[in-house]
Length: 290
Image 1: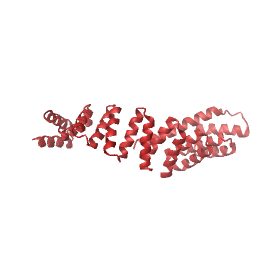
Image 2 (image 1 turned 90 degrees about the vertical axis):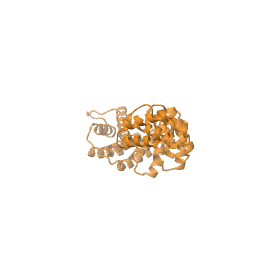
Image 3 (image 1 turned 120 degrees about the vertical axis):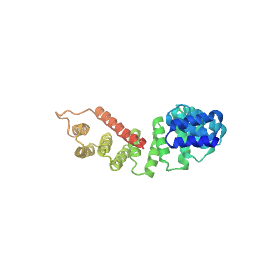
Image 4 (image 1 turned 30 degrees about the horizontal axis):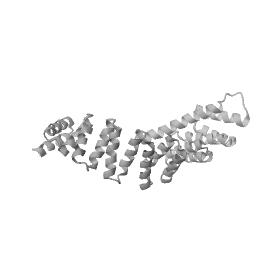
């Protein structure tokens, strides 16, 4: 009879009758509250239906079967959905304890504790992942971002460089290398990263971002002729306001001020910084959309 009840609930779930499957599973659990297959099925139904009892159902599973790593993983996901990050972290720690080689769980644990403000531990956990899997791009990206946000730009640059060693045309890593080196005052490295970015970023209309990055680097180095040449090249592919304004500013520095209105140095820097942030955001959104 117990097997029949589970089979009926599972059949309803498989047929897309999730409400019916949930009702049958919950009804059966009233008589058999520690039936693990029923608990797991009810939890799956709860998630599908957007109910708020998936975590409590999965807690009962891990109480009955504390060595069930998959159940702990499901509990972590349910806890995240419920906004309970401390419980999610506890569940992921159990997954890692039971499956020490589960690098995906380690990455999720790092993100979860980072969201709770435990930055140093999150970085340490991700460093473990990279130590085991030097080419784990998800971990490297997260490490670069955590170091970047915590102000350790040297470490962030190392992570971005490591990404480009595995993927030479990684657009987001090249954007970060250019931005971080600029912030560190490594202008030559920033210009070089933008030169690589101009080739790597094949999205229509994106080559102008790399041009602007190279132009900014040359202006910071006061190599005005090089900046002028790049700005003229940029106008061949982009005749919109920012490129023409940057060109007007450079012309003023090379040939002297004219009657034509040109922006100030502060305005040029602010506009280019805003554009660079927009460029990075586009690629972050594209990456997270996968």
